[in-house]
Length: 180
Picture 1 (cartoon, rainbow, N blue to C red):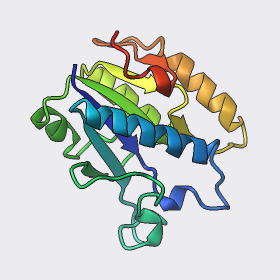
Picture 2 (picture 1 turned 180 degrees about the vertical axis):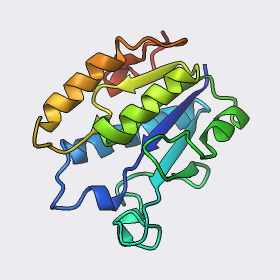
Picture 3 (picture 1 turned 135 degrees about the vertical axis):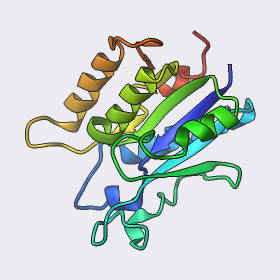
């Protein structure tokens, strides 16, 4: 089984002091470890970056567009740019995955309740066997729920999602590479 680790929107503009994300440092450490494992087994690592409109912290000309400096990005890693919550919509992601001979996706990143959720659902709807590490994504507290509650809610939904190759397998990062 050839895996692709999809790392969504781990960009500086999403991790400022005014937007604290749940366990951000721990997440980066876990993603780096998982990326090393995927690469060592011949899989692909794909970083997805959001392109915001002018004035947005994620605009390609803004400092916030850059990936977090603590992420271990390698020259052979793919970079896919997106303009919506769905990393597949109007992007090269599907082509990159098919050309790399990928059989299964591991979807991670920020934000659980927006781009990660939309991409997980899109992957499952497109027939991709999908793993979502339960501790491999993050978000911020929202007025209606804490980040911890949002993460727990989405983990439960993805683990029970009806789709052709679903539901997603939800497990800790340390178990994501175990075959199913």
